[in-house]
Image 1 (tube, rainbow, N blue to C red):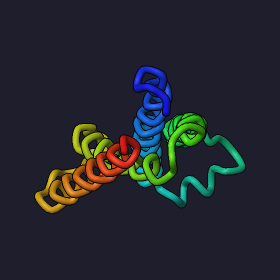
Image 2: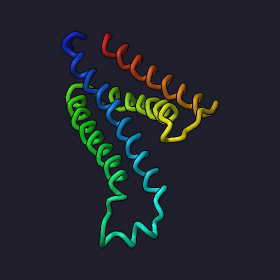
Image 3: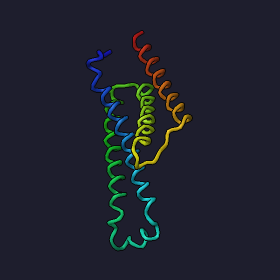
Image 4: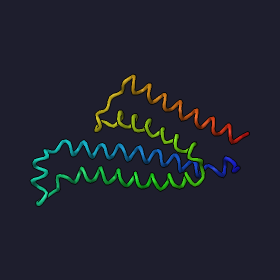
Length: 140
């Protein structure tokens, strides 16, 4: 078993993957909201001509896809070191980041609710239980 000091770069990979994945979801949602604000008839009519009004959509979505691809690369690095039964539940933390990010970022117009917050707390409790039980098994 490797020491905690030797495993920190892999923990950093899991953390980066979670943050990048959450950021990707927020950016892609922003792009889709931008698309929703456009009149689809005018969008379809403009396809042969200028599509400059689609640039904001493309920018948000492309940024999200770049973050998502980077997240996948960091995730593969994390999988090289950690058991899938430990690493995969950690991705549940991205739900929390997406929820908080969507509420904080005014562009997304998300609201806080008791049921969503309770659900997020349950996800957090589940991640805690999985990581705690996995670390206890590694010690024995």
